[in-house]
Length: 154
Image 1 (cartoon, rainbow, N blue to C red):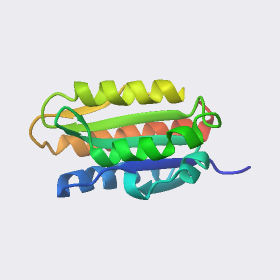
Image 2: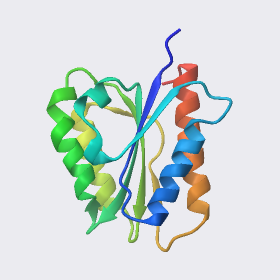
Image 3: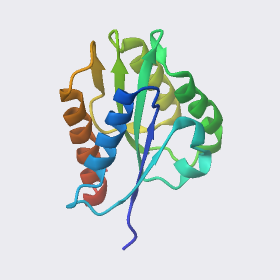
Image 4: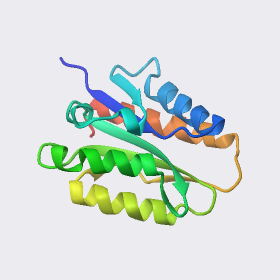
């Protein structure tokens, strides 16, 4: 049986967002889960990466009430090349939001609705000042997505 692939795409402008990416990778590569996991930044993610993925975990920051520019750039470059081939792609998202994350979430929902991707978990919005608990929340999100992918739920 071919292992499924989880593509984790995260914007990393700070030490704290790096910690969240590491938590996502740790959750997705838990010893009880047997899938391929790839961690990439938005600027190094290309349509081929999405085409080869069976699910995506997207992590972005909230910048001026919107997703990070690099996350938007990823969508701009990959939208049309993957549109027809990846409809129904399972995905989850976490947003590191200094304010409330609603504009960022709305923008991601608009784009992923157009792509016809399937959000399989509630969005995780990490609001306000940095909290150590954010790490465990992202780890759990990634682990749940990876386990669901491995077991065929998604």
